[in-house]
Length: 225
Image 1 (spheres, helix red, strand yellow):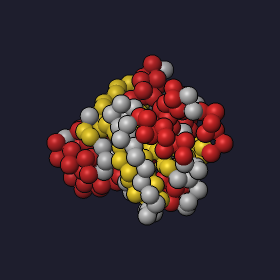
Image 2 (cartoon, one colour):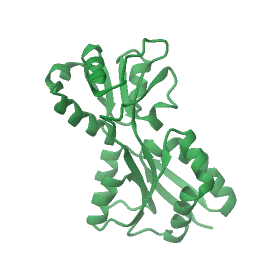
Image 3 (tube, rainbow, N blue to C red):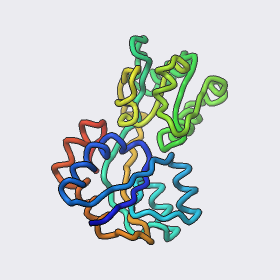
Image 4 (cartoon, rainbow, N blue to C red):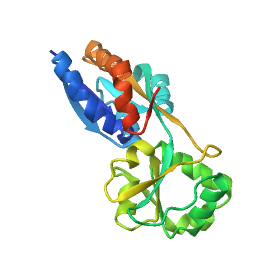
């Protein structure tokens, strides 16, 4: 039986943690996991580190495919950006882009990540014309969920993929961003060009994409791709 080395960011974490033990029991393969923030993962892979499977936003994987680091890409899940507050705190109106803008301007602190949702928010706040106004109260976090900053009371609003906010203790999900400003990110699995266990890694991808995995992916705040 094979040992599959997987490197992934946190967005797919909760579904992954539930599905991989099932895969191991069904196949006898063993999975070794490295949790790495997206930015660091790109650095490490471009620096020559090799694994069997990489799970990342599809845009980042496309970059790795172009660089010849990843040989094949398979879309596995989609996630929207959500907003959360500390448990018990008042929930702002986020029913429209304008309402979100008002909530952000009124908040004493805002937290988001360095991952795909954070990159999107930087552009969104620029587009709204409020980047300069909110600069002093923004906390951009790496390697920990943005929700933990709100849970500690260091930010009134936390923005991140819904799937990354749901498991954080001490916060409540206000909801996903409204349709007029929502950004759906596709997360994909990529076979590394130098994978030692390509066949077993491909079997793991098929397991994530199977109909039986869909209810788990949905339960964890994502949609199957």
